[in-house]
Image 1 (cartoon, rainbow, N blue to C red):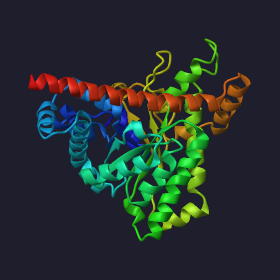
Image 2 (cartoon, helix red, strand yellow):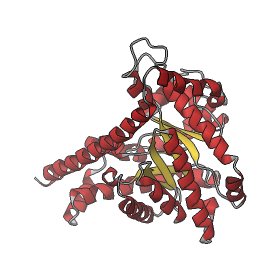
Image 3 (cartoon, helix red, strand yellow):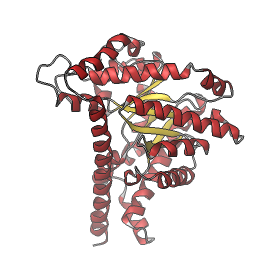
Image 4 (tube, one colour):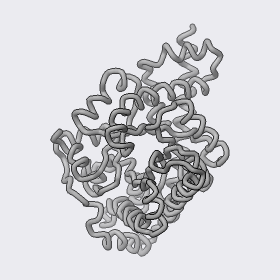
Length: 365
């Protein structure tokens, strides 16, 4: 290993792959990413599955079998998802074992249609974890207000959680608290906190995409807020990890909820393709890399350096002051991004169900 991806490992950051498909799993693609590039985990979401299943490769046989067994298109979707996640977990399991449960995870998200339903989220999270039956699976739960108590409940049940769609710093504080309360309940019930892992997924590029729309062309603030948001989030993570209360849980085996940088491929061609990789490298963090970022890092693009996440923290806080002075409401930006993020995943979920309906008709015609 000698490319930009492997350097992230050297700097204490875990690179995960933000993509999943059955063809990748069965062709050895994931194995190659692990052995050649140092990829240490995989994430998925409704949009990723919509793209994979729309392509169709590798899904038809199981889809037809599920249909003949009486499964609805929605039930068939989850059958296909569980199979993909199960296969990915098996491939990643040796890494999970060799890192003592620090890495080697694959994430699967609860239905975006229940993002505002706490009880339904808890039920599906527990069901998915039980159906897959692998210790290195993380259940993704969105950081909506309804998601917060679900995070606590699911962690208290001894289930790994990837908290997704985090944009707002105050909401991130609530996510850290929800994780800690879950660990506290797990320990109180006699559970082993060392067996439970969690990450908090901060979506990065979308922050700049939304704020850029609110700034004038050429404004010097463009391209700064997303990195600043993540840097301040990391600062809060460090502060939280240093509290005496968390230290007590850590002494009992609890693992910190690592910050995960999601949506880290740049959307604006004016920005460097590895901007959200190079500037967010830090110990006990994860960066989920989309295919475009993988290729950029393989080709030697960028300026990866240790602990870039803690460079000029004071300057990161100043960015928020400058945004307010420019008339940009941080709260409105993050609220908009959360609403749009959930809506986007619902749209992908609905589209994949329609895709499966069409494919079933084609297969049985």
